[in-house]
Length: 128
Image (cartoon, helix red, strand yellow):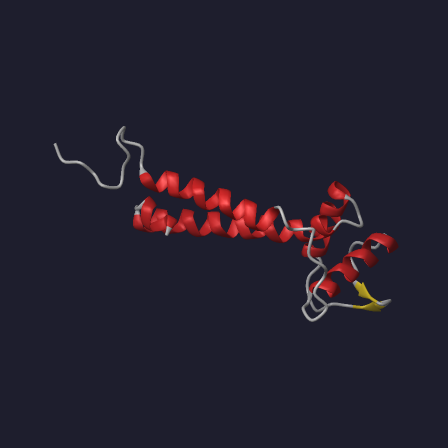
């Protein structure tokens, strides 16, 4: 009987344990400190917050504005997700502001895993 080195003693695949460890550490490292860091002024983050806040205040969900002027640099879908997240976690919450990005991050990871697994038919390779 040949023993597979990538399994535990009872046949539990090692890549499942690695996947669980990877997801658990990413949740601890990404989700828990999400609301504790201030908004970075140099990046695009404050613009996203201001546009979403103006959409929420004005009630106009179709026309994004920045300081009262039209802001059509990006489509409004991400602003809608920020507003929805603010409705769930509180409007003045940095956690609520950054939550859609973390969800997008995990969805992207799941899509990469799914398509890599589908075309290579190797779950371990897809996890890597």
